[in-house]
Image 1 (cartoon, rainbow, N blue to C red):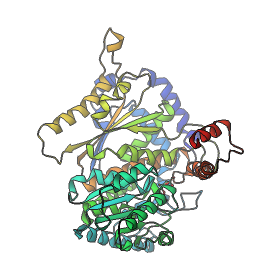
Image 2: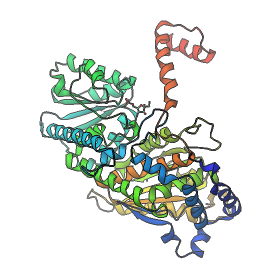
Image 3: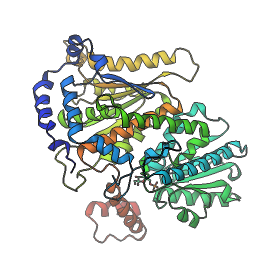
Image 4: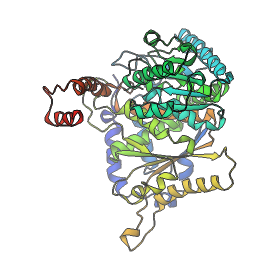
Amino acid sequence: MLIRCDHALAWPLLQNHARAVMPDFDLRGAFASDPARFARFSQEAPHCFADLSKNLWDAQAEDLLLQLARDCEVERQRDAMFAGEAVNSTEGRAALHTLLRHPPGNAPPGLAWALAQVHETLDAMLAYAERVRADADITDVVCMGIGGSGLGPQMAVQALQGLGDARRRMHFVSNVDGHALQAVLVGLQPRSTLFIVASKVFNTQETLTNARSALDWFHANGGSEVSRHFVALTTHAAAAAQMGITTTFGFWDWVGGRYSLWSSIGLPVAVAVGAAAFRAMLAGAHAMDMHFRTSPLQANLPVRLSLLDVWYRNLLGFGSRCIAPYHAGLRRLPAYLQQLEMESNGKRVDRQGRPLALGSAPVLWGEPGTDGQHAFFQMLHQGSDIVPLEIIAVKQASHTLPGHQEQLLANALAQAQALMQGRASEDGHRHFPGNRPSSFLLLDALTPAALGALVALQEHRVFVAGALWGINSFDQWGVELGKLLARDLQLRLGNGDMAGLDASTAGLLQRLRA
Ligand code: F6P
């Protein structure tokens, strides 16, 4: 039986260390007394260099955390996920997103059949994407999907925009709020539009409502050939067919929604940047998978990031983490990571359903730098809470405007430096305490391969934290209740039935109906 981190032998040692050393720990002093600190706490991983040295930990803390990972058998849990065991215990499913980026051949034992299906579907999806790209009549692609069926494709299309074809516009609609779809439809023509409807289960209210409205618009505006202008990405092709959408690409129930960018759900990315770039993204993710599978724990970047996350969340009591990508293309990355981390690890019970005795997923939030600097960075520097910052910087720009990139990178460096160094002042308002933590992830360029590696890195980091907390990172029961109540309240909005409602909901409903 696997043990939870708070039951591990290393846990009380970590608690003692945090209590004994951390109150007086000072990053400035740590660098001054240890010339090897940067080397000790930085490392290479595929497509990504990470500097973790400006964090509030020391070698002993990391050694104890590594012991914790061994106590909790993180490597065994990792191998079980890669091997296709039913690690999603509440749904009795594997979580095999890593198989989606596994090259053909050499399948993990017992998964040859699944890998063959993966590549058959991938080849078909990419061939379709290339046909769309070659079709000069299609000038606009409207992608409809929410959560894992929307955030990943949108984030990746924006990130790789430089590789896209400017003649084709990519639109994303996720929200059921009709303002979103209507704003996109204005100015479009059915004959030059492709609608991609992405939904794993094909019963998600938002996506189905948007798809129905898009179909209505298509027919009302003289559209013909639904099979050419609508494509569905789903594990439930029959449900799509019921709606009249017969062009479909599938995937499998062992691909979690928030881990599905690598499956047919990635079609918008393939349409935007082409099959070769999509394959390069998969290859980058696979390189990170191999790093995660084969590197010793102390040189394993997803593991080290995750240990730091647990250290901050549970031993130092920091409740949130801020993400600042210093690349405009990564502007949706914070939202993507929010779902990845908070839907995976925002749980209050362990795998056995027992209440957790410690905090799980931190609150993730963020905005691209330098925008965030002129908004909430004040709080990072001088606020009363300590919020670890994760900077994601990209060395080479793909634009040609002189001066911008140096300014951008200088700002990224300056924020990490200012958080750590602070600046003493007699005037409390002008005093920067410093000793505030940040991690620095550096990509050489925002290529498809680097993006794939970055996202896989974050996936595995979330997995390791879940493994340490002893939770199932692959279910999401917490989203169900709201969906159920919304169905009931939609009926009540229509018929005015207030029976059994609490006074607040009844009062609001009455105002909405008046
Ligand atoms: O409501 C949560 C959720 O189930 C996510 O896990 C998922 O990514 C999203 O909804 C979309 O689901 P689907 O792809 O089935 O429409």
